Image (cartoon, rainbow, N blue to C red; front, side, top):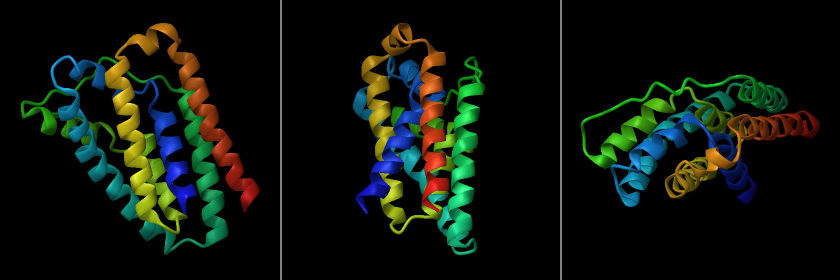
Length: 184
């Protein structure tokens, strides 16, 4: 039971290190308070990952258990490879003219649609016994990495090259994916 929460937390936290979302947080942290941003992250991610968990649960009712494990493993390995190989465009930032909480929430909600963390929440929910724990773990992971992004600001990317951060994050996904093949 706690394993589902911890797995979702670890995967989401690791996937977001150095991601576009952290870059967006660094920008917003100059304008808004930490509490405003954390509330915005909570709202945006809860809606985004909540939808992913619901979709994942629906898919789990259609796909058999062993096939689900293989599918989840395949998806995680692909996420890992894409994380290592793919570099995101950093020049595109969305700007909204709402309050700080809604601006942060909308930025997260729209910025994370189809992102690897949303797809991770969906994939984990497909095989979860307790999908609510997957949602809590993924939201907690986003809040934790958001807090790190707000506190540290740009210092992490100044000390550690982004390609190393990307490689480590990608390898974590590949390892989790390979573990799915072994566990089936």
